[in-house]
Length: 182
Length: 182
Image 1: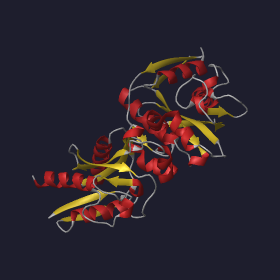
Image 2 (image 1 turned 60 degrees about the vertical axis):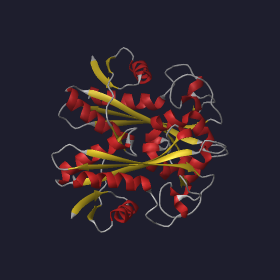
Image 3 (image 1 turned 180 degrees about the vertical axis):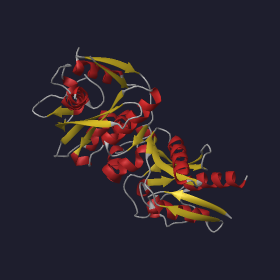
Image 4 (image 1 turned 30 degrees about the vertical axis):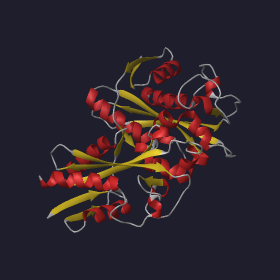
C-alpha cells in the first residue's frame, strides 16, 4: 500500500485528498506551515516546497499549490489566489468581473512530490470553467462558490462533495499515483 | 565611501535608489531575477532574499520589496502588488475601490541587507496616503498614478521625480545607511 505524507495547514485540502485517494492509499496529514516561493507557475512553487520539506522532514512528502486563473484578468488571482481571497474575498472577484463577458477561468492544482535528497517532481491538473455572475452556494472553500466547472450549471459551492467535483485536484493526484506505481 | 550592491530586475527601482543615495554612496546595479518567498510580511521577504543572494553571489547585497496596502481591502494588494498590478492593473484597483469611502492606504518599502555568511537585516519605510478616485498622471511606475501621499492633492503619477517623492523608499534606505555607518 502506498503511503503519502501530505504537508499542508489547510484541513479542507486534506479532506479533499482523502476523498480522491479512497482506501487504496494511506494518507498521513502533516500540519505544518512552510515557506512558499512567489512565482507565476504553481508547479514551480510545489516542486520547491516539496524539495525543501522532504530534506527538512527527512521523509517522502507531497504538497499542493492550487489557484483559479481568470482569462479576462490575465490569470489573476492565479498563484496569489489564497492571498487575494483572504483580502478581497469572493465579492472582490465578482466586482472585478462585473460587466465582463468573457467569464472563462481555469482551476489548477500542482502537486509536488519529493523524496529526501532527490529531485522533486510535479503534476498539474487543470479544469476549465467560468466565473459565476454572483456568489452561489456555501460548500467547499476558497473560490468554490463562484467557479462553475465546464458542462455544469452550478458552482462548486452548490455541489455536495462527490467524485465529480474538483477534477483539477483529482487529475493532478491521479498523475502522481501513476508515477508512484511505476 | 559606502558601496551598495542592489539586486533587482526593475530599472525604475534602480533610478529611485540612485536619486535617494545621491553621490555619497556608490550604487552597483545587479540585474538578476531571484526567487522570492510568499509572505504577508515584506520585511521577511526582503531578509530571506538578501540572505540567499549574499551567500550565492558572495558579496554584500541589498534588495527591496515594496507594495501598496489598502486598508479597506484588508491590505490588498500588499505583498502581491507587482503580481496583481501586472494582471488587473490600476483599473482593477480603482474598480475594487469604487464607492468605498475609506481610501486610506500605505506604501511600504522593506530593504533587506546581508553580508555573505551573516544573518540578514531589514529596514521598513512606511508612507501614509490615499487611493485616488481615478488614474492621474503617468510618472513613476506600479501604483504611482493612484496613490496620493499624505498632505498632497496629487498622485505620485502626477509628480516629477524629486526629493519629496517616495518617502517610504527614502525612509527605508536612510535607515539602512544609518545602520551601515555605525
